[in-house]
Length: 447
Ligand code: URA
Image (tube, rainbow, N blue to C red; front, side, top):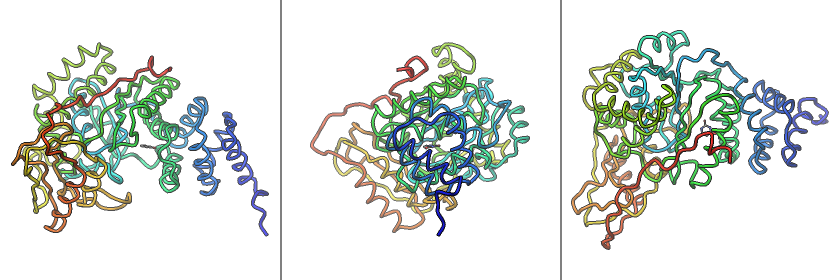
């Protein structure tokens, strides 16, 4: 019979599993061995899964996290001469279309940006799926094409390449099926390894907090943000993190084409107030870092670029450069044919919104995917006008669903009615809360 632990790779991995299981820190050589073994498929999935569970349960020290992030970043190709000066990353949410607006906004102020974005998975949407709802838009560009486009217009947003941090890809796929996604050090390593490998010296992180996010509490979101800022500082990058609310969808629109339509409104100086607030906050941090100016000065520039049309003009140039049909974005992109509205039958206060459930409604309408290879439907989605604490008057529109059939639209409305809790007993309007909660920069991250 095969004696498993007589095989050198297996016993080598066993030793690493036992160390992490027993709370003994991995040294730099261990870390190299671990990540090299994962990236080259030298270790079987069951051993990697066991190590991930040990790390999930016992946590990892800062020095392990720094070394692991570095090793995962180096497991694939790395950008040695960054094309962009700033980058941003969101931990993911529902209705989060900020990249579509922030990227051209920041670039319109002369700051180059070359961003790798992802596709939607589960209840959260992805920037690439939204962009692909613009006819002709291409997300797969070669390194040379990205470089040329950034040189010409200052901006490219593209799909993550296969060579970017392949060890993360393997670890993430195993975390997804072993209940180990929701770990602060593992999330921090996963996000920051890709950001280190893709190069920009300045990074703004949008760490979402609430029932539509990975991090449901401010305490955990703060812990994650601080860890990512520390990883960045250790590797010589400037990183700032904003904690932002994700206890309701950001803006109103959730879907693909429908989010492009809302992004256009925002780029033309309108759109929902919470979306505009978050866009201005993120862009101001990026501009302040990119131009090395005060946050106040950066905000003045950002607001000018947004309200005087510079950001919109850069958006048009960007869409054109990546093959998109610019005439199509001059008006709303078409949405799915069956439209159904939910209207308030009484005056009512919005008590709470199950944001994950709303993301799930959009997913089931066809806007998202269960598996990475599933196709998405650009035209389906919803607008949710309910915001926590607000009063909706009798007859006011709460939500609209865009579906492929009456049956799907009807089911979606019923699901939304479960997800949004209303009180009709006459509570007062609490006003809208600020969507930006806290800034974590390197000073705060040390504690
Ligand atoms: N996003 C990532 O890229 N990795 C995680 O682990 C979680 C969110």
